[in-house]
Image (cartoon, rainbow, N blue to C red):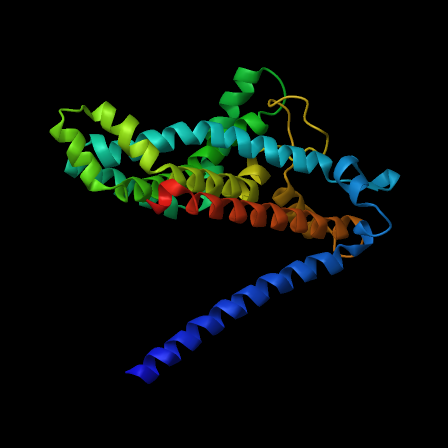
Length: 285
C-alpha cells in the first residue's frame, strides 16, 4: 500500500512538472517565432502602432484594444446575469427549479461556440443593423451579447460553487434570528463567496479575451481602431485565425506569434490574480 502511494505521488508530481515544462515551451516557442517583430526595440511600436502592412507597420494595437473592449463589454453584460442566476440557484429557487436551472446552465456550457455565432449571424446581426442605422451590423456591440452568453455558464458554475462553500452555520444563525433571504444574500452569501466571485469574474474575462469564433463571425474584422462600440473591429484571436488562413511566410504571419504571446501573458496575469483571493483572510476563515 505504501509503495502504491509513493508511486502515485511520483506520477502526479511528474505530470505537474511536464505540464509546467510544456507551458514554458509554448512561451519560448512564441518568443522565438515572434522575435523579428520584438527585436531592435520594436515592442513599443508593436503595441502602439496601427496595422498597415503596405506601409511596413505591423502594430497590433487595434486588435488589442478591440479585444479588451469586447471582453469588458461582454463581462459587464454577463456578470449581473451570472450573479442573479447563481443566487437564484443557491438561495431563492425551489429545489426542483434549482436542479432544472443548473442542468440548463451545464447544457449551455457544452454548446459549441460556432452554434451561438451562427444563430446570432442570422438573428442578431439584422436587428443590430436596424438599430445602429449604418454599416453591416457586424460590430463590437453585436458580438458582446453573444460573448456574454458564452461566458455566463462558466461564471455561474464558479459562483454557485462559491456560494455552496459558505459556512452553513452562519446561514442557520441568521435564520434563527429571523433574517430574510435578502439579508442572507447581502450579509452572508456575498461576503462569504467573495474569492469565488472574483475568480469567476477573472475567469470569465479570460474566456472572453481568448474566444475566437464569436469575434471572427460577428465583430466585423476591421483592422482600424474602433472609435465606438458600433464600429467593426478585429480581436487578437480573430487576427490569428485570419492571418493563418491566408499566409505562412511573411511579417504579417510573424505578427500572430506576437498576438499569441500577448494573450499568453494576459492569461498568466489572470491566473496570478486568481491566486490572490485564495490567500485572503476571508477565505482562510
